Length: 439
Image 1 (tube, rainbow, N blue to C red):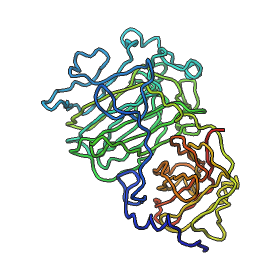
Image 2 (image 1 turned 120 degrees about the horizontal axis):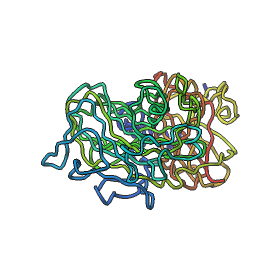
Image 3 (image 1 turned 30 degrees about the horizontal axis):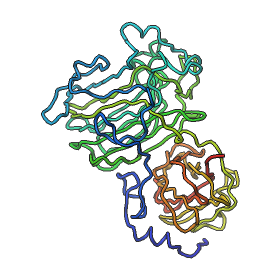
């Protein structure tokens, strides 16, 4: 194996010590001086909660009021108010549904568009006010129940009570973010139609660690359309101190499929690009949950959704590599070759030749369909000072490139640092990497 000389960055990384990429796992490390690049749109003026994306001008907005029983847009499980301003729910099958201002389920449900080819072209299930690009937020405390279950925030459909038969089953489309009680792990699922456990394109939990039982935790599920599909983002305020951490992202641009036929006229990997009149907060098997500051906001993700151009790199280097798996293999356009480097903190650096507006990187991981990898992405204009742009854990479900996006900035160099993987073998291995930005 061939290694280059130890760089200043590698020394800093070694000194920095253990730091959790997601805040909940022990394997990944990042420099102590770096800060996560989480977009911020300021503080919500209604409930004082930090917003990741700004509210869409004129868009749909809902906040939990001091009198939930008097809210005509809120349906489902009753809540009991507490002196501290929180509410308690004791129903082990909780469904809290939020309608848009223009939707009345009792009189309008039967007229919802449900055939998915029609939904693709129309863009909504009921009307243009449907929940589509949204930021769903809630602070929740799991007190007692079955620790193996999870909180679930979701949108982009209507009522979820069908039994596999159109049209009822087809009202139940959604992207869902789950927060597991036992360890704070997060996963995404896609519901292409509703039939109990059928109709789901599954995901896997990421970022798990210590239990969230007995703690008030903030959880955000964000979804918005991007060219060719939908972007999903999950954030946690685990310490309940107003600091949001990006735990997981996923782009649905095709191939995320169900195992059964689609009764709604769509494909098995249908991308749910349309809006729906209902958003929801859901959980099962919890005998007591305290909650506060629930909200659903239609958002304007801005340039986060636009990162269209693949930028050509003029060179690629690495901190370490095997002679048979050099850095150049990561930019040769061949998923059958790879760069491999040994040791936590090993990194691959792409050189664009000149400073460009950059907003993301696509990374394909060797054996990425059977193991996850913890990573951090950095950018630099001079190859000396690097700034953290993104960090997280790969999905562990695909051999194809995964998109990791961040707020646009000027950079000539993009660095992908590797920390750990589920194989625990101490090796970073990337089959392809490409920088994306403004054309």
